[in-house]
Image 1 (spheres, rainbow, N blue to C red):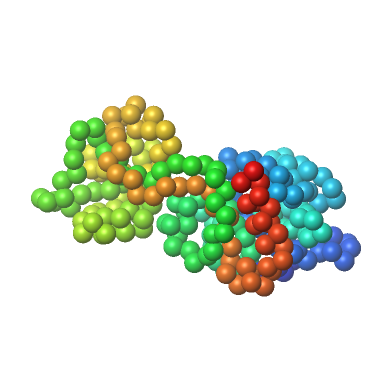
Image 2 (image 1 turned 90 degrees about the vertical axis):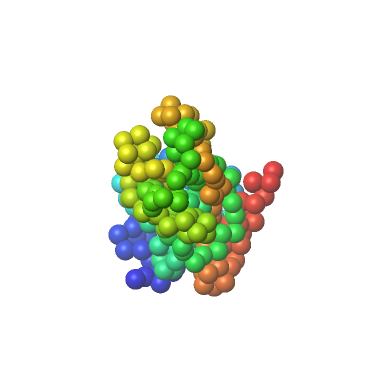
Length: 238
């Protein structure tokens, strides 16, 4: 495991002296990357050598490590699957990361989250068939979800013992086919639930995209991290 701030193997290599990043940031690949890159660019981050950050994060480039600048600081950007971002931050391979509150809660990662980026707002909910209540008295309910830890904790707080069924796509099918009694899943508008005869029964967690920080890095690399945090807060409060 590379310590935070060490050159990342496999990434772009400079022939000059400036090869060690001031900070390393883990970014999620996928639809969140575009809005995040625009927000970071507004906060003063650019591509290396004066290019735009959008150019540095061009989809046509297959490199998983990209170089950027925050003022005079060199930044390495790691492109990861969203579920892997907290792991890189927790172990210090990345100083900062961008991930959803749902992922952070499910993974139970010990990290700071100094900025709510106000992107991807939605809710993690319990949902089931319209008009049907969950029977918790005569049998053990079955819960279909891709958030097994979060679901188990939620029902445990209510004193309800449940059976968790791991489902990773088309979770709404579970109550319709009898696989599960209810689901725990993300809901944005509720349209998909309604189209499948389901409704929200209760809300577990309000979800948005967070900037998270490794606890040691937050102290050891306070100058560039604090600069980015201040800039992001300023942009978000504008």
